Image (cartoon, rainbow, N blue to C red; front, side, top):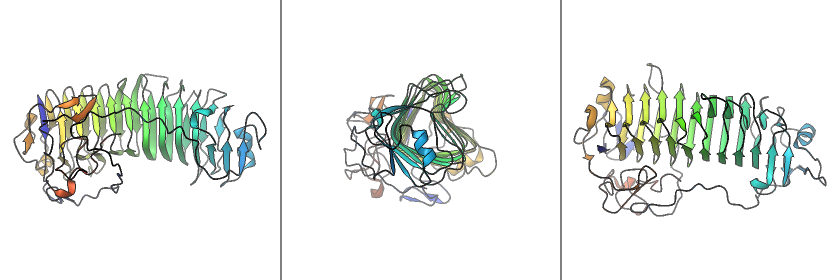
Length: 425
C-alpha cells in the first residue's frame, strides 16, 4: 500500500502552516537553479562528472612536472621546499608517489583537467595524507587519485587537520577499510566523483568520518560491495550529492552524529539512512530537504533523533520512515513516505504526540491528517521520482505562498516541490 503524508502544522514551537519554523535551519537557502520545476517531467538524473575545462587558478608559487622543465619533478620535493601558504601547481602528468602534506597548509592543484593530472600511489598506503595539524587553506584540487590501499583511507587520510578535496576523481583504490578516512578533522569534498574503489572487508565503508565535521557538496559516490557508503560520528552536511550504493548495506550510518541532507539522493540495499542517538536530549539531527532516500528494506530508520523531513521521498520495500522516540520538535510535511507495510512507522512514544499531521490516519497508527493517497504517478520509481501529469501529489503541498514552486504554483509533495523545486541533482 502506498501512503503519502502531508503534515502542515506541528504543536509546540513550530508552525508550518504559515511557513514559520522556530527550530532554525542551519543553512540558508542557496538554491539558484533556473530550470523547470519537474512537476510533470522525468528528467535526466545522470551524474555530472566535471566541466572538462582547464581550471582557472591563481599563479602557483612553484610548478611540478614529472617530465621535467619545471621547478620540481615530484610533488613530494615541492612540499619539502615549500612553506605554509604556498601554492603548488601540477602540470598534466602521472605522479607515482604517496603525497604527505607534512603539517603545511598548502594549496596544491592541477593546471589541467582533473583526468590528466593523476596521482598514483607508489606504495600500499593512502594516496594523500594530511595528519600533522594542517590548517585553513589546505587543499588539493583538479586531480585524479588512484592506486592507494592498506590500512585506513586508501585514497585520502586526514587526521586532526583541515582539508579540502575539490574537483577530483577518486577511482581504483582498495585493500583498505575505507576509501576516505577522517578523524578529529574537518573535511570538505567539493565536486568529487568516486567509483570503482574497494574496501578490504564486509564491514568496510567508502567514507569513514570519525569526529569533527564533513561537508560534501557535489559529491557523487558509486559504491562497490561494502557495508556502508558513509559511516559517521560527525556532523555531516550532504548537499547536491548522490550516493549510488545499491551494493552497500547502508547509505549513511549515523552513530553519535547527525546529518543534514539537501537536494541529494541516497540509495542502499537495506537502509538508506540509519541514525541512532542516546536517550538524553534527542537533539542529534536527521534533516532532509528536497531529497530522496531509497532503501531495500527501510528508507530512513531513526532512534532518539530530531527528525525533520520537508519535500522529500522516503522509499523502502517495508517502511518508508521508521521513527523511534523522536524529539518533540520533529516534523514531516510535503513529503511522500512509501512502504508496503508502513509509510511511517512509529513506536507510540509520547513524543510522537507532538506531531500534528493533519488528516486521515496512515498505516501503523501514525497520527496523520491531510493525507494524500492513491497511485502517485512517479515517472519511474524508485529510479525517478519526478511526477507525471495527473499525479495527486502535484500542487498538494504546503499552501503557504512562500513555499511555492519556482513557477509560482503551489508546491508539490515530494523532492521536486517547494522553493528548491529542482530536487536532487
